[in-house]
Image (cartoon, rainbow, N blue to C red):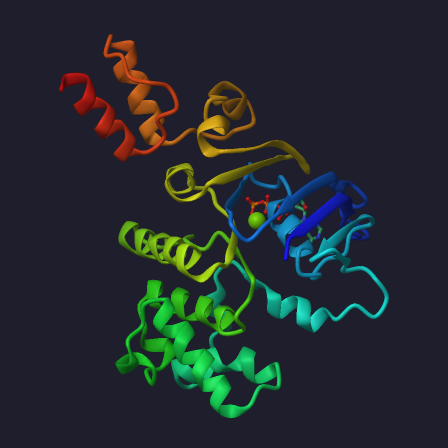
Length: 283
Ligand SMILES: Nc1ncnc2c1ncn2[C@@H]1O[C@H](COP(=O)(O)OP(=O)(O)OP(=O)(O)O)[C@@H](O)[C@H]1O
Ligand SMILES: [Mg+2]
Protein backbone atom coordinates (compact mmCIF):
# COMPACT_ATOMS: atom_id res chain seq x y z
CA UNK A 1 0.00 0.00 0.00
CA UNK A 2 2.85 2.38 -0.65
CA UNK A 3 2.77 5.34 -2.99
CA UNK A 4 5.81 5.64 -5.23
CA UNK A 5 6.28 8.80 -7.25
CA UNK A 6 8.85 8.44 -10.02
CA UNK A 7 10.34 11.45 -11.76
CA UNK A 8 7.12 13.37 -12.30
CA UNK A 9 7.02 16.74 -14.00
CA UNK A 10 4.01 18.94 -14.60
CA UNK A 11 3.01 22.22 -16.18
CA UNK A 12 -0.40 23.93 -16.38
CA UNK A 13 -1.71 24.68 -19.82
CA UNK A 14 -3.15 28.13 -19.53
CA UNK A 15 -3.28 29.80 -22.88
CA UNK A 16 -2.75 33.51 -22.47
CA UNK A 17 -1.26 33.35 -19.02
CA UNK A 18 2.24 34.75 -18.66
CA UNK A 19 3.24 31.56 -16.82
CA UNK A 20 1.82 29.21 -19.43
CA UNK A 21 4.08 26.26 -20.13
CA UNK A 22 6.29 26.84 -17.09
CA UNK A 23 7.24 23.68 -15.19
CA UNK A 24 5.45 23.68 -11.85
CA UNK A 25 6.78 20.29 -10.75
CA UNK A 26 10.24 19.24 -11.93
CA UNK A 27 11.38 15.64 -11.78
CA UNK A 28 9.95 14.75 -8.38
CA UNK A 29 10.67 11.30 -6.98
CA UNK A 30 9.50 10.31 -3.51
CA UNK A 31 7.61 7.52 -1.82
CA UNK A 32 5.18 7.26 1.04
CA UNK A 33 4.07 4.52 3.35
CA UNK A 34 1.18 4.34 5.74
CA UNK A 35 3.34 4.54 8.84
CA UNK A 36 4.26 8.10 8.24
CA UNK A 37 2.74 11.47 9.11
CA UNK A 38 4.33 13.61 6.44
CA UNK A 39 4.07 17.36 6.06
CA UNK A 40 4.77 19.06 2.76
CA UNK A 41 6.04 22.59 3.28
CA UNK A 42 7.37 25.24 0.96
CA UNK A 43 6.88 28.87 -0.03
CA UNK A 44 3.76 30.07 -1.81
CA UNK A 45 3.68 28.85 -5.39
CA UNK A 46 6.28 26.12 -4.81
CA UNK A 47 3.89 23.45 -6.11
CA UNK A 48 2.53 21.86 -2.90
CA UNK A 49 -1.14 21.80 -3.91
CA UNK A 50 -0.26 20.78 -7.44
CA UNK A 51 1.85 17.92 -6.12
CA UNK A 52 -0.73 16.41 -3.78
CA UNK A 53 -3.41 16.51 -6.45
CA UNK A 54 -1.26 14.11 -8.45
CA UNK A 55 -1.50 11.48 -5.75
CA UNK A 56 -5.15 10.70 -6.41
CA UNK A 57 -5.21 11.49 -10.13
CA UNK A 58 -6.86 14.88 -9.99
CA UNK A 59 -3.90 16.01 -12.05
CA UNK A 60 -1.85 13.86 -14.36
CA UNK A 61 1.91 14.29 -14.74
CA UNK A 62 3.38 15.18 -18.13
CA UNK A 63 6.25 12.83 -17.48
CA UNK A 64 7.07 10.17 -14.94
CA UNK A 65 4.91 7.63 -13.18
CA UNK A 66 3.09 7.06 -9.89
CA UNK A 67 2.64 3.59 -8.45
CA UNK A 68 0.00 2.73 -5.89
CA UNK A 69 0.65 -0.58 -4.22
CA UNK A 70 3.09 -1.38 -7.01
CA UNK A 71 0.71 -0.62 -9.86
CA UNK A 72 0.94 2.37 -12.18
CA UNK A 73 -2.06 4.64 -11.68
CA UNK A 74 -1.51 5.77 -15.29
CA UNK A 75 -2.02 2.24 -16.65
CA UNK A 76 -4.86 1.92 -19.12
CA UNK A 77 -8.11 0.94 -17.42
CA UNK A 78 -6.77 1.74 -13.93
CA UNK A 79 -9.66 2.08 -11.48
CA UNK A 80 -9.64 5.79 -10.58
CA UNK A 81 -12.67 5.59 -8.39
CA UNK A 82 -11.06 2.92 -6.26
CA UNK A 83 -7.85 4.95 -6.06
CA UNK A 84 -9.81 7.98 -4.86
CA UNK A 85 -11.45 5.96 -2.14
CA UNK A 86 -8.03 4.68 -1.01
CA UNK A 87 -6.23 7.98 -1.28
CA UNK A 88 -8.64 10.49 0.20
CA UNK A 89 -7.97 14.13 -0.56
CA UNK A 90 -9.29 16.95 1.61
CA UNK A 91 -9.15 20.26 -0.23
CA UNK A 92 -8.44 23.63 1.29
CA UNK A 93 -11.56 25.03 3.00
CA UNK A 94 -13.42 21.73 2.50
CA UNK A 95 -16.40 23.02 4.47
CA UNK A 96 -17.57 24.85 1.36
CA UNK A 97 -18.46 21.42 0.04
CA UNK A 98 -20.90 20.66 2.86
CA UNK A 99 -24.37 20.86 1.43
CA UNK A 100 -26.72 18.27 2.93
CA UNK A 101 -29.37 19.05 5.51
CA UNK A 102 -27.63 17.22 8.32
CA UNK A 103 -24.10 16.22 9.18
CA UNK A 104 -24.67 12.46 8.94
CA UNK A 105 -26.18 12.71 5.45
CA UNK A 106 -23.32 14.86 4.36
CA UNK A 107 -20.70 12.43 5.56
CA UNK A 108 -22.68 9.57 3.97
CA UNK A 109 -22.27 11.07 0.53
CA UNK A 110 -18.89 9.47 -0.26
CA UNK A 111 -19.61 5.90 0.87
CA UNK A 112 -23.04 6.09 -0.80
CA UNK A 113 -21.27 6.98 -4.03
CA UNK A 114 -19.13 3.88 -3.65
CA UNK A 115 -22.36 1.92 -4.02
CA UNK A 116 -22.25 0.41 -0.53
CA UNK A 117 -25.45 -0.90 1.11
CA UNK A 118 -27.38 1.58 3.23
CA UNK A 119 -26.48 0.13 6.64
CA UNK A 120 -22.78 0.00 5.73
CA UNK A 121 -22.99 3.63 4.57
CA UNK A 122 -24.52 4.69 7.91
CA UNK A 123 -21.99 2.64 9.84
CA UNK A 124 -19.03 4.20 8.07
CA UNK A 125 -20.45 7.70 8.32
CA UNK A 126 -21.14 7.38 12.06
CA UNK A 127 -17.73 5.88 12.67
CA UNK A 128 -16.01 8.67 10.76
CA UNK A 129 -17.92 11.34 12.70
CA UNK A 130 -16.99 9.76 16.01
CA UNK A 131 -13.35 9.57 14.85
CA UNK A 132 -13.24 13.31 14.25
CA UNK A 133 -14.72 14.02 17.66
CA UNK A 134 -18.45 14.43 17.03
CA UNK A 135 -20.94 12.93 19.45
CA UNK A 136 -24.11 11.22 18.27
CA UNK A 137 -26.14 14.15 19.52
CA UNK A 138 -24.59 16.24 16.73
CA UNK A 139 -25.27 13.82 13.88
CA UNK A 140 -28.51 15.47 12.88
CA UNK A 141 -27.45 19.08 13.18
CA UNK A 142 -27.29 21.18 10.06
CA UNK A 143 -23.71 21.61 8.86
CA UNK A 144 -24.43 25.32 8.67
CA UNK A 145 -24.97 25.74 12.40
CA UNK A 146 -21.58 24.25 13.29
CA UNK A 147 -18.51 26.22 14.35
CA UNK A 148 -15.68 26.70 11.87
CA UNK A 149 -13.61 23.94 13.44
CA UNK A 150 -16.58 21.55 13.55
CA UNK A 151 -17.40 22.20 9.90
CA UNK A 152 -13.83 21.47 8.98
CA UNK A 153 -13.93 18.22 10.95
CA UNK A 154 -17.24 17.20 9.39
CA UNK A 155 -15.76 17.72 5.94
CA UNK A 156 -12.75 15.56 6.87
CA UNK A 157 -15.14 12.89 8.17
CA UNK A 158 -16.70 12.86 4.71
CA UNK A 159 -13.39 11.66 3.28
CA UNK A 160 -12.66 9.31 6.21
CA UNK A 161 -16.00 7.61 5.69
CA UNK A 162 -14.52 6.14 2.50
CA UNK A 163 -12.04 4.40 4.84
CA UNK A 164 -9.00 5.54 2.88
CA UNK A 165 -5.54 4.11 3.36
CA UNK A 166 -4.07 7.58 2.99
CA UNK A 167 -5.52 10.89 4.02
CA UNK A 168 -4.11 13.87 2.17
CA UNK A 169 -5.01 17.35 3.34
CA UNK A 170 -4.26 20.77 1.89
CA UNK A 171 -3.69 23.22 4.75
CA UNK A 172 -6.33 21.64 6.99
CA UNK A 173 -5.92 24.20 9.78
CA UNK A 174 -6.05 27.32 7.58
CA UNK A 175 -8.26 29.98 9.09
CA UNK A 176 -8.90 28.19 12.40
CA UNK A 177 -8.17 29.82 15.76
CA UNK A 178 -5.37 28.34 17.93
CA UNK A 179 -7.77 26.06 19.84
CA UNK A 180 -9.31 24.83 16.59
CA UNK A 181 -5.87 24.20 15.10
CA UNK A 182 -4.75 22.23 18.10
CA UNK A 183 -7.95 20.17 18.14
CA UNK A 184 -7.61 19.41 14.47
CA UNK A 185 -3.95 18.39 14.63
CA UNK A 186 -4.53 16.32 17.78
CA UNK A 187 -7.34 14.57 15.97
CA UNK A 188 -5.12 13.83 12.95
CA UNK A 189 -2.34 12.61 15.24
CA UNK A 190 -4.76 10.23 17.00
CA UNK A 191 -6.15 9.01 13.72
CA UNK A 192 -2.69 8.26 12.48
CA UNK A 193 -1.71 6.41 15.63
CA UNK A 194 -4.87 4.37 15.91
CA UNK A 195 -6.22 4.01 12.43
CA UNK A 196 -3.18 3.02 10.40
CA UNK A 197 -3.98 5.83 7.98
CA UNK A 198 -1.01 7.43 6.27
CA UNK A 199 -1.21 11.20 6.58
CA UNK A 200 0.23 13.63 4.06
CA UNK A 201 -0.59 17.25 4.66
CA UNK A 202 0.38 20.64 3.38
CA UNK A 203 0.98 23.27 6.03
CA UNK A 204 2.37 26.75 6.42
CA UNK A 205 2.75 26.39 10.17
CA UNK A 206 6.26 25.35 11.15
CA UNK A 207 5.15 25.01 14.79
CA UNK A 208 2.43 22.52 13.87
CA UNK A 209 4.58 20.41 11.57
CA UNK A 210 7.40 20.32 14.15
CA UNK A 211 4.98 19.01 16.73
CA UNK A 212 3.01 16.49 14.71
CA UNK A 213 4.87 15.31 11.61
CA UNK A 214 7.58 12.67 11.57
CA UNK A 215 8.72 13.55 8.07
CA UNK A 216 9.00 16.85 6.21
CA UNK A 217 9.20 17.32 2.49
CA UNK A 218 10.31 20.79 1.52
CA UNK A 219 9.33 21.93 -1.95
CA UNK A 220 10.90 24.89 -3.64
CA UNK A 221 10.15 25.91 -7.22
CA UNK A 222 8.69 22.52 -8.00
CA UNK A 223 11.62 20.50 -6.66
CA UNK A 224 12.28 18.65 -3.44
CA UNK A 225 14.82 20.58 -1.40
CA UNK A 226 14.74 18.37 1.70
CA UNK A 227 13.06 15.13 2.66
CA UNK A 228 13.97 14.29 6.24
CA UNK A 229 12.85 14.37 9.86
CA UNK A 230 11.63 17.74 11.17
CA UNK A 231 14.69 18.08 13.43
CA UNK A 232 17.01 17.51 10.47
CA UNK A 233 15.12 19.90 8.17
CA UNK A 234 14.97 22.66 10.78
CA UNK A 235 18.71 22.40 11.34
CA UNK A 236 18.97 24.19 7.96
CA UNK A 237 17.59 27.47 9.26
CA UNK A 238 19.64 29.67 6.96
CA UNK A 239 18.72 27.75 3.82
CA UNK A 240 15.04 27.75 4.80
CA UNK A 241 15.16 31.47 5.43
CA UNK A 242 16.70 32.04 2.01
CA UNK A 243 13.58 30.56 0.36
CA UNK A 244 11.23 32.45 2.67
CA UNK A 245 10.51 29.74 5.23
CA UNK A 246 10.77 30.04 8.97
CA UNK A 247 11.82 27.65 11.73
CA UNK A 248 9.49 26.83 14.66
CA UNK A 249 9.20 29.36 17.50
CA UNK A 250 10.64 26.76 19.86
CA UNK A 251 13.80 26.43 17.76
CA UNK A 252 14.24 30.21 17.87
CA UNK A 253 13.68 30.33 21.62
CA UNK A 254 16.25 27.58 22.14
CA UNK A 255 18.77 29.50 20.03
CA UNK A 256 18.19 32.70 22.02
CA UNK A 257 18.89 30.82 25.23
CA UNK A 258 22.05 29.27 23.79
CA UNK A 259 23.21 32.76 22.76
CA UNK A 260 22.85 33.76 26.39
CA UNK A 261 25.10 30.98 27.50
CA UNK A 262 22.56 28.37 28.48
CA UNK A 263 23.81 25.18 26.92
CA UNK A 264 20.92 23.29 25.38
CA UNK A 265 21.21 20.34 23.01
CA UNK A 266 20.74 20.88 19.26
CA UNK A 267 17.62 19.79 17.43
CA UNK A 268 14.98 21.22 19.79
CA UNK A 269 11.93 22.09 17.70
CA UNK A 270 8.90 21.91 20.00
CA UNK A 271 8.12 23.91 23.15
CA UNK A 272 7.77 20.64 25.04
CA UNK A 273 11.36 19.72 24.13
CA UNK A 274 12.64 23.17 25.08
CA UNK A 275 10.88 23.02 28.45
CA UNK A 276 12.39 19.64 29.22
CA UNK A 277 15.86 20.79 28.16
CA UNK A 278 15.64 23.90 30.37
CA UNK A 279 14.54 21.84 33.35
CA UNK A 280 17.44 19.43 32.71
CA UNK A 281 19.85 22.34 32.46
CA UNK A 282 18.83 23.84 35.77
CA UNK A 283 18.02 20.50 37.38
N1 LIG B 1 -5.01 26.13 -12.20
C1 LIG B 1 -3.82 26.69 -12.46
N2 LIG B 1 -3.53 27.19 -13.67
C2 LIG B 1 -2.34 27.74 -13.93
N3 LIG B 1 -1.34 27.86 -13.03
C3 LIG B 1 -1.57 27.39 -11.80
C4 LIG B 1 -2.82 26.78 -11.44
N4 LIG B 1 -2.75 26.41 -10.14
C5 LIG B 1 -1.52 26.77 -9.71
N5 LIG B 1 -0.81 27.35 -10.69
C6 LIG B 1 0.58 27.84 -10.63
O1 LIG B 1 1.41 26.74 -10.30
C7 LIG B 1 2.40 27.10 -9.34
C8 LIG B 1 2.29 26.20 -8.12
O2 LIG B 1 1.03 26.44 -7.52
P1 LIG B 1 0.50 25.65 -6.26
O3 LIG B 1 -0.87 26.11 -6.02
O4 LIG B 1 0.72 24.20 -6.47
O5 LIG B 1 1.51 26.18 -5.13
P2 LIG B 1 1.41 26.03 -3.55
O6 LIG B 1 2.76 25.61 -3.11
O7 LIG B 1 0.26 25.16 -3.19
O8 LIG B 1 1.18 27.53 -3.08
P3 LIG B 1 0.36 28.11 -1.80
O9 LIG B 1 1.27 27.95 -0.62
O10 LIG B 1 0.16 29.54 -2.15
O11 LIG B 1 -0.91 27.34 -1.67
C9 LIG B 1 2.17 28.57 -9.04
O12 LIG B 1 3.05 29.33 -9.83
C10 LIG B 1 0.74 28.82 -9.46
O13 LIG B 1 0.58 30.13 -9.91
MG1 LIG C 1 -1.50 25.49 -2.12
